[in-house]
Image (cartoon, rainbow, N blue to C red):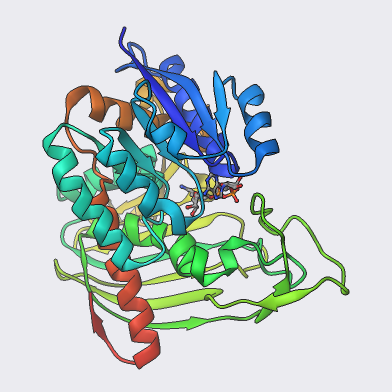
Amino acid sequence: MKKLNVGVIGAGFMGKAHVVGYSNMPKLFWPAPAIPVMKTVCDIVPEIAAEAKDRFSFEKSCTDWRDIVNDPEIDVVSICTPNNVHAEMSIAALEAGKHVLCEKPLASTLQEAEAMEAATKKAAEKGVIHMTAYQYRRIPAVCLAKKFIDDGSIGEVLNVRCTYLQCWSADPSSPLSWRFQKDIAGAGTLGDIGSHAIDIAQYLAGDIDEVVSMVKTYIPERPVQEGGVDLLGTVKLGADAQKAPVDVDDEASFLARFKDGAVGSIEATRNAWGRNNFLTIELHGTKGSIAFNYERLNELQVCFADDPDYCRGFKTIYTGPAHFYGPATWNIPGMNIGYGELKAIEMFDFISAIADGVQPSTNFAVAAQIERVVAAVLASARDKAWRKV
Ligand SMILES: NC(=O)c1ccc[n+]([C@@H]2O[C@H](COP(=O)([O-])OP(=O)(O)OC[C@H]3O[C@@H](n4cnc5c(N)ncnc54)[C@H](O)[C@@H]3O)[C@@H](O)[C@H]2O)c1
């Protein structure tokens, strides 16, 4: 079976998630489209790079990402670093003929995202695959929602209501990591998790045409975190810790008109005590409704207008072997998948795209379109007016 040598750049939260995905993919999906080999891991922090080599069974580690991009033995590059370096790394990897899986958001500015999209044109002519890690659309229950929409089961989609709510930054003593710095992150909650909400909303209801928005920063300064991985609110720094300003949004909310005619709303915040990974989408159509919540990711709620009156209301479908990716995961409905299996599904789609020579559904062009929505949301909040995407 064909093997593909993988280089992972950035060995924090997502570095680990990509390794879990690559390593488990052939265990779940067999025959696998190819076997990923953990070749080289890179982190700018030498201790993190060295630890990741041992912990994740890489053959080598390095601290300069160019050592991966310029290595002729590497076939595939996973970019798991903060957002401001995605463009430079992705463009160099594409030019070097490597298949690239870049974490989301695609970049920290729309200009960078569009440069990345442009760089895929030449690379794709040579068979190079590009993908962005919008994994939530690959959840079997979300795929089932898409099937119900595409086959007309809920009729014409009228309304889309989508939220992504977390609480890890609600505590003001949680540190000012890279996620709270505009020059590294680009946008705050909007780019970080709002982008996922935009992705599943556009996946299910088509592209957004125009938006009107509000963005808000609740905690204007935070204790400084010096480099390393974002500790995602787990470190509470004392009152005497040095503080610096937050220059990104804590929360973004917007109304949207979709090109296909639906209207809807999207809300994202990391300051919602009690909400942990509350990514929800509800769609109302002329013939039924669908609702999904990541905190119960194996379930899809459906209601069809032609259900008998005495059955009116949502019913729960438990995804399992009968559903998308089901035969590859666990063989009884209700055994359930979680984030680890989802990253293996993502790697199955990425490695299959390489094997088949077909660009995946979350390619850089799709991710750049999300950046256009993000830019329109920020412009609308600034101008207090509807903005075209
Ligand atoms: N798909 C998802 O659900 C999801 C979830 C979390 C994060 N992300 C995205 O993944 C990316 C990384 O986020 P994270 O949570 O893993 O961050 P993190 O802070 O946990 O880890 C980032 C790592 O990158 C390293 N790094 C920074 N600059 C580097 C450079 N120039 N070269 C090499 N290494 C460098 C850091 O030292 C750190 O170890 C971000 O773009 C983020 O938005 C996606």
